[in-house]
Length: 248
Image 1 (cartoon, rainbow, N blue to C red):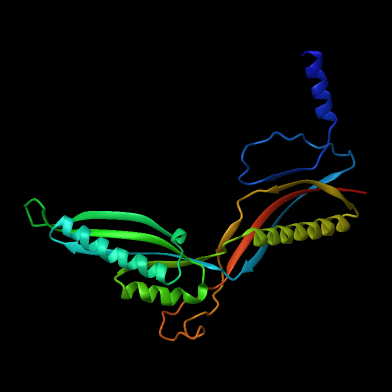
Image 2: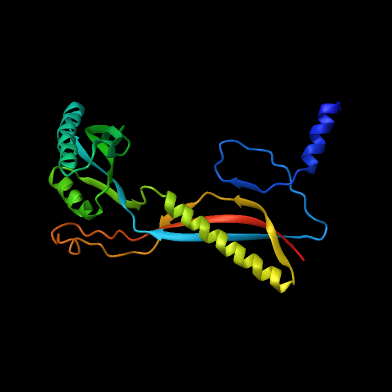
């Protein structure tokens, strides 16, 4: 080992620092283990912070399925109806950036008979788009308009928070507060003090999921004729693994 390498190793061994890692980091980094006093006790606390928000975007898919004995005719009929569906979406205020084609399919429809090869008796054409609606009060009405304009497939909706940053940060603060309170409890019970946080690890990806329902149907929106929709609440969770140093 040359003199430069010896010096680098000595600096690394003498350095103690707070380390923090989060899930989904762009690249792995090597961290130097912090120095711990001989009279210290290390305590690892796992805490999950939670918060919830009323969702502000809805996602669903919609489309058209057509059938014809001729493949070309099935596709043409499908294209005409799908153009009406997309035009209806835009007329209802859905931005072009929130409409994305997710699949176009043309499949033969077979007739099966015993001891005979299958026979094509027609073709099914389908076109599906994914839609994001940002005006939550109009989801039911938009779905009704789509059906009136030829859509015969609708799947969804699912609800989300468009910008999750503030909700995730609130959940992180909640997790940290829980962990600190638990560390204080252990320290006091053992007759010790919490000296510092040694490391914080956001050990798993934050979770966003549908929690409890809140009624937001068409009648509540003054649109009794529209399809009822329940938006519910979207809950956010962040799990932290925190190492504390305890001592007298």
